Length: 499
Ligand code: BGC
Image (tube, rainbow, N blue to C red; front, side, top):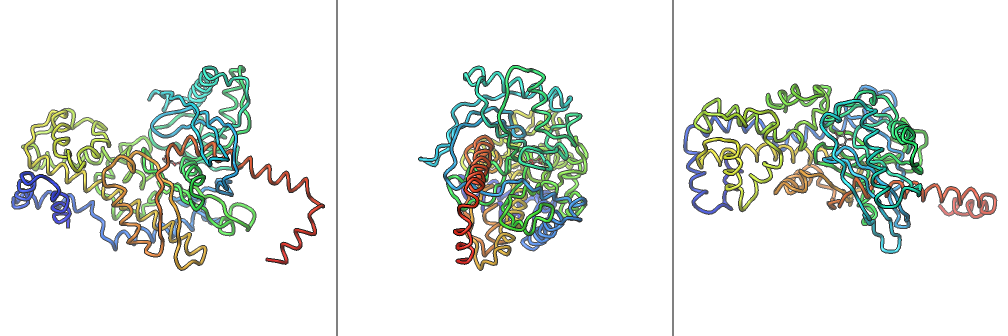
């Protein structure tokens, strides 16, 4: 129960806080608080149900005829191989869709199996630009890239470029990628339905002062999987829990009905953030989730993401705190201007508040900053609220990850699956017990899968270079095959017979 979880958490507190916090539960108001918190609690059975619903949605998304209406888009990425450790070279990478826009110069070194970030530069994207015209946005990106090239004496080279563009795109080829829709605070006009590579190249052409080499488009989940894949070649899932949330994994080609060919595997960008957009998660959405969705710039889309990711968690907490205050259960019934300001409660506060050692102190600092009159019981309740909302997020992600792992195991007809997940994102990395709770859920729902988690160091940047490098390796290998065609016919036949 919520109380038991709370007491478990509080056990690590110094004695004084512990007794004050447990006394709180003897008060009648605890029941009313609990009633709110329980709405965020997901039982094992419910999580299993959610995982099963997602399993069915993955199949819908992969289907040739069902994918149009599928809420989980299951987008082919045209990434057909993970790194084999022989990739090398210098690359440029652009990274748009996380906290910042960045330009990077990356070196992939074969000998040491390392991906080195040579240089990188952050370019702010003002909020108005995130919701302005597409032309402005791409002109800005092209200008940032030029500044970077100039300051690193690279303007005369035409390096291949990996573009991590972390939004749902219908990829036609590795260098042709149509934006389906904006997510996370972006809403630039004239980009949805367009080829993002074309828009980038047009912006560079408008300037006319530099050029770029071949382009590979990459979702951040794919970049994360690929950058971890260089270190651990059994990395076949990439997951992001940051501003947004999403995952990709290696699917059998024969199940990817929208792309021709049956042999081998292809990385699928699930876009699991859209799970629930057909109303399938209504039973677990709270009234607070509904408000967050209604107030967002894209109501009705990315339902799952809005219950999980960093862009929304703080706001769910804020809305619940306002309600508890209005019900007289917090701060003597008095809200503050800051607490009533939408989006004022940042997700990073949740991590600070739930910190094991300094959590209570941090809570009190945040509450004071919000101009609230708190006592110790208030601080304990606020910690409980944060815990309920972040735990739900971790468990939902765990359930979704379990669905992917189970699917890979069944696909391969293996009794047990051993696999690695590359992970990135501020929520996963910064929250004190998010990863632990997520793993516990995966163990519960995917008991036949042994999963290693590899935290990616800058997967979006380095991964984009990795995807470009793997694409080049494959092109090189297929060129070699073509060149040696005719000479090796006999050998090939022999190999086939051997199999
Ligand atoms: C986007 C995904 C992305 C995820 C994590 C979502 O909003 O739709 O493409 O991978 O955020 O950045």
